[in-house]
Structures are given as structure tokens and as C-alpha cells.
Length: 124
Image (cartoon, rainbow, N blue to C red; front, side, top):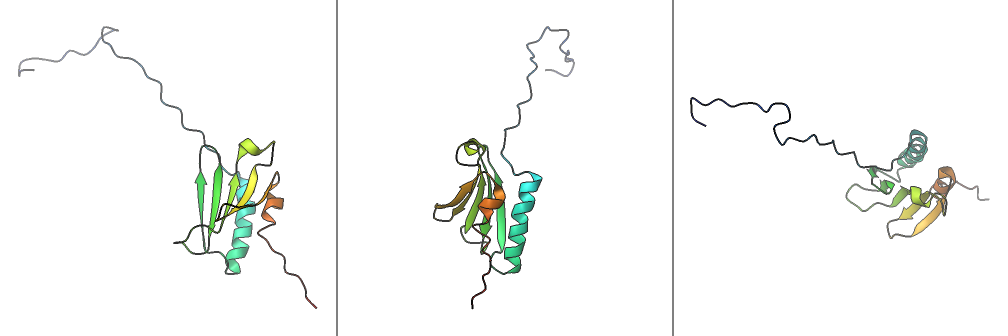
């Protein structure tokens, strides 16, 4: 354009403009408030005992993962996973150790987490 030229705006459908829809947000699996409260209660007890020191939460498209670390720079000791695809089969919740071995899997989070919450026994 030159100095004397003026730009004309597009009017009434004479252009090739299109209205595009905003892309939908990707669906993610997440822990609900009750599940997170149960996990954090266990985590808090283990931190108080000095066993665990750090955690990470990942919300992926197919599952939610709560990773537990002894030290920040290490691989996670345990992963608490929620996979809704397995809810009707083996149970949506599982506890996995760092080697990939599944310690426990089930439909109820409380029962699955019992594998990590070792109760003290009285020895006589």
C-alpha cells in the first residue's frame, strides 16, 4: 500500500473468513476430593514416620497417578494409579512398585492402600 491508499474492511460476507470452533479441552482422568483426601492422609502419616518425603501427581488422558518418593531425585517408590478403563474388570485402583510389579489392585481405594499402611503388631 502507498501513503494515499486506505484499507477497506471486509463487509457482509464478501471475504473468505470462516468462524472456527474453539478446540475442546483434552479429557483427563483425575482423583476426586475424597480419593485425594484418603491418599494424602496415608502420605501424611508416612511423612511423619520419616519414610516418605515427596510426591507428584500426574493427570493423563487414560489414568491418574500419585507417585511417592523417598527422596526427590530418585524414582518413585510407589505409584497409586486410577485407571477407569479397568473399573468393571480388575478395579480402577492399583499400587505399583518402582519395578513395575502391581502390589494390589481393586475396586475400593481404602482396601488397595492397606498394602502400604503396615499396622504395628505387638510381639511378646
